[in-house]
Length: 549
Ligand code: GLU
Image (tube, rainbow, N blue to C red; front, side, top):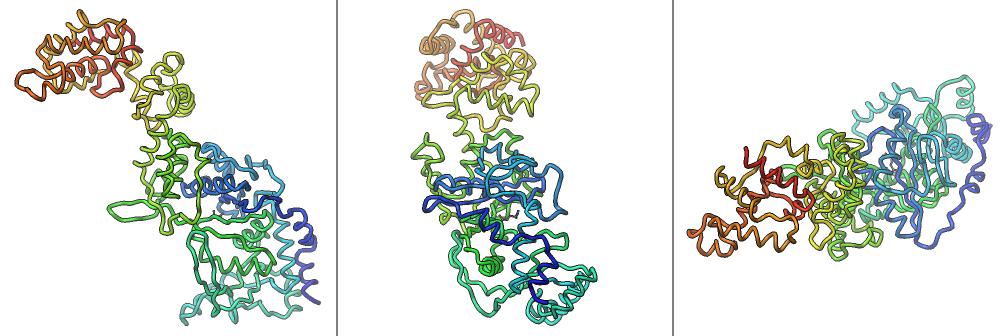
C-alpha cells in the first residue's frame, strides 16, 4: 500500500491535474498585463472596502490591457445567504465596474477560466488534493474537535506556539496501513497539507504595497479539504489564483500573515507565486483618532448607502481613487475634464497605514462631479433614483420639459451651480420651482429687511412699475437698482459701504426681498434664470401671495 493507493481510496474519481493545467492555459496577454480579481464571499452585504478593492483591480487590469474577474468565494456554507451573489453583482453594476470574467448573476457566468463560484469547483480542488496525497504532501487527519481543543490547551499552558505542526501533528506520520483501515471503517477525517517548512528559517517577501517583509517559514499542517469536501480559503486561493492565471492578488491586509503559508502551498504545488498587494483598511477619523470604518457604527461602510442617498457612482469612484492614490487629486485639478481611465494608478503609492475616509470630502467631490453633468444627464439620473426611492419627486419630474428647464438653471456655463451633492438633496433644492409645492410653503426666510410694510412696499412697487417679463438680464438688474434708489437704498453695495448712514440698505437687500417672495429662500441659484423658468403669471401670483400674508 502506498500514497497512490490512499489517494485513490479518498478521491477515486478525481481527474489528473494535467487535465486542468491544459484546460486553463497561460493567458496570452501582452507583457505587463495584470490579471486581477475581486473575490468576495456572498454574505449579503457589500462593504466599502470591497468596492475600493474592485475599483483598484478594475483600474489596473484596464490600464495594463489585462483581465479583471469576479470570483465568488462560497466555501463557507454557514455564511451563505440567499441571493448573496445577486447582491454583489448588482452592487458592482451600480458602480459601473465591469468584469471581463466571472458571475453575472446568481447562476450565470462569462469567461473561459470558470466556474467562478468556488462551490462549483469542488472536483478541481479534490484533484489537486489527490495530487498532494500522491506526493506524500497531504494526508487525512482524524482528530476530533475535542482532541484539537485539548492539544491547544496543552500548548497554551506550556506557552508554546499553538497549531498543528511538527510533533503535534498527530496524523502526519501515522502508519499508512492504519490510515487506510480507519478510512475503510468509515471514520471521519479532513485533509491536511504536509508542510516541510521550518519556523526558524526566514523568508523574504515583497508586498507591492507594504514593501519588504520578513516572515518565519510556515510549518503548519493546515486543513486544505474540510469534512464537507470543500476547500479552506487558503487552498482555494492557491488553486484558483493559479488556474485563473491571476498575476496580482489584491486583498485586504488581514491576509498578510497568511502569506508564508500561501507561498508554501504555491511552491509545493509547483505554481508560480503571484504578486501580492495587501490593502490597508479604510479608516475614519473620530475625535482625533483613527479607527477602521465599521459596518456597525458607520452607515457609509455599506455600499448600498451611496445608492440610497443617490451619490453618483462616478463621485464615489473618484473619491475612492483619491484616497487610494493621493496624487489623483492633483491630477484631477490639472485635468478637470479627462476620463478617469487616463489616470495612471499605482499600487505602490497606496497608503500602508490606511487611508482616511471622509464623507464630507466625498460629498464635495460629488458636487464637482454633478456640476459637470448636463441637465439631461441630471434629469435621467434623478428620475431613475426617484423611481426607486422617492415617489413625490418622481411625480414632480413627470413633466420632463419643465424639469429640464429647472435643472438647466445655472448649468453648462463656466461657473455651473454646485449646490447638489446627492440626488436625495434634489427635492429640497428644487421644490419651490413647482407651483403646488411652493403653495404649501409657509416659511419665508427674510434676511435684512423684515418689516412687513417695507416688504409690501418693495414688492408692490416692483411688480407695478419695474417688472417686465421681456427684460434681459442687464435690464432686469438695472430696474432693481432703480427701484432700490427710489426707496432709499444704495444702488451699489460699494456706495452703501462708503456711507452706510445715508441709506436704508442696498440693492442686495432689495433683491433678497424679491428672491424670498418668489422662492421662500434667501439663497438660491441665479434669480433672473429662476424668474425666466417660473414665468410671468406665477411671478405675479407669488408676489401677491407674499404681499397678502
Ligand atoms: N473571500 C475572501 C474575503 O472575502 C477574499 C480574500 C481574497 O481576496 O483573496 O475575505
